[in-house]
Length: 415
Ligand code: ATP
Ligand code: MG
Image (tube, rainbow, N blue to C red; front, side, top):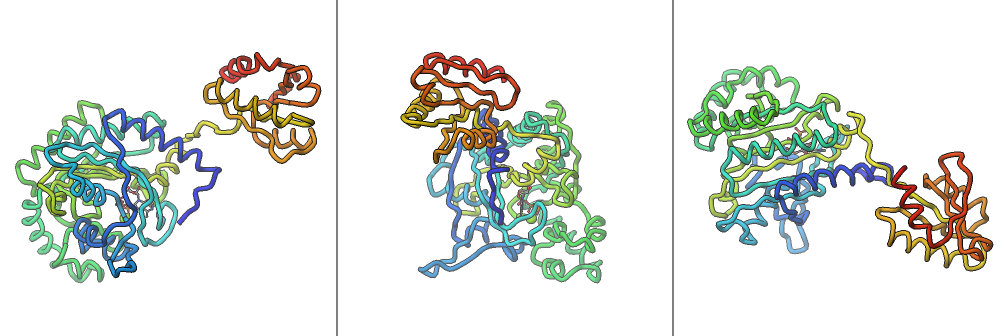
């Protein structure tokens, strides 16, 4: 679990803001959810025989002996909230949420035990139009941020019904190569053979690669859905490859699944992953509701943004007010408030804790501010401030109180 320190939090905040503004521009509204849910919710939605439920959940009993789990992902909570709050009765919902997720994984670069996701869910939409729009929306985010090192992979998992037939075919195949399966896969063979395809064990890769693929066993409707998605993406100019091996690690997916992957971050290449989960609302006790969503891992997103040369706008102070002598601090506070009132987006720091001119100017320099505003007894008597550029060799000048806001507005706009 990581602390997100001030030297990186600015980039996080910037990226989160850009993404939020984009999804809101597509008509999505925020939903804020608890970090804790009943364990049962995740067992039922993600699936008993999955890595997350079997190995990765932070589960504990509360004081009332109820089993609770720190959420490993957001979709289950969104669906639970939609059902318990009646958001899905004859309504469609386009929602986004963000926050920490918890998985007891082996920590390594790009893989943490508390990590953050930005999550988007559309409930009540059958697609494939919404499937395409969700992907087009991702493409807009990458464009807006200059992120180029991402590739889109898509696949279709068909419906629950068409998967039953495929399940039998998989069992047959994996049984024929049983001696090459690892312990987990042997256990999963009968219970959930699809999960074998999601194995992260490198020694299993050859066996998995040779397995039959779902896309060859799609039902007609799913096949049509997938074709339509493809032509909508083609028309929108969003490039993709069909990866028939993309299955995703949660049981609730159906039909469209997709992943934006990069090779710029080492082995943790999945940055943003999603899919359709048409059966989930009903499975969790709601009325049958088609749905689709994606989740982006913010740590990997930040790392990729930086790997593509991205740099968030600076959030350092614009001006630092140096105040020495009788009445100077009072005047500094008054000027700072006035500037915050009058100059759009200005960032003003007042020197706190006193000190000599020299030590205050040192702090001003360290703050990375563009200008120091200097207030001494002489300035106060003359109702002006000294304006000292800190990032150039220009001389200090004297600006009257009345024209200070206007002067700074002009100077900072230019900078
Ligand atoms: P992976 O294949 O890397 O394990 P996943 O399929 O388990 O990913 P999802 O459950 O689809 O991931 O979660 C969506 C996104 O959240 C991923 O694409 C990834 O960017 C991010 N993510 C998942 N697990 C972690 C983690 N432990 N640490 C950091 N980011 C993660
Ligand atoms: Mg995982």
